Image (cartoon, rainbow, N blue to C red; front, side):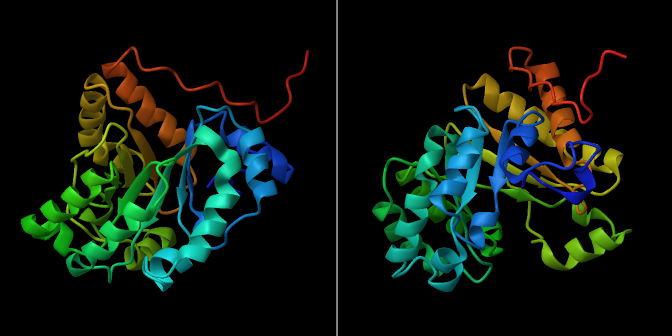
Length: 275
């Protein structure tokens, strides 16, 4: 997402017209999760506006729509998939990866369906898969079979790291809500491709969030030294400080890999004046 009520007038200028919001967000971070496409496929005109607001190297990880992944479960989904692919075409290189988030009911027994689906996808995009059935994490054979299918399609496995979040009971309304909704899976830190993607969920307390991501600092720095190009998304239950935290994570990685390019300077919330 690139808008949040808690950011208005503090992190991002307010009010902002719809065609300006992503541009302001992109001055803070160089990547975003396209989560809204899961709920409704946008028009080509809307997507063209996203492209106009961002540089070609900005990264959108765009989620496939719910009818494809959850309702039809990757089967007989040609029409909603075609509409989605046509809609996002204006993104061009900004479509860093198409994100195939599968429901928790998608089990190792369903992997052949995923393999068939991946084989039918156009080679013009990169793909990344997020699974939420615990067997993929607990059963080495299930993990190995999934890795083989993904590797054959040059697709990435997206880990959603919630281990820091679930270490201690929730202490806020936002944390209590996330406690009932977020997946509780073992940690996974393996990259399959040259473009790994990580989703990390911390706590509403900043220092606990920073403490929980320390293992990722070393992993991401190592990936960069190997020539990979990772993308990391930092979340908290309330997401009130998410852009600030993302920049802090980037700074910590850059302290270990100085050649990593700095993030842009954020657009000022208030217009600059002479006095």
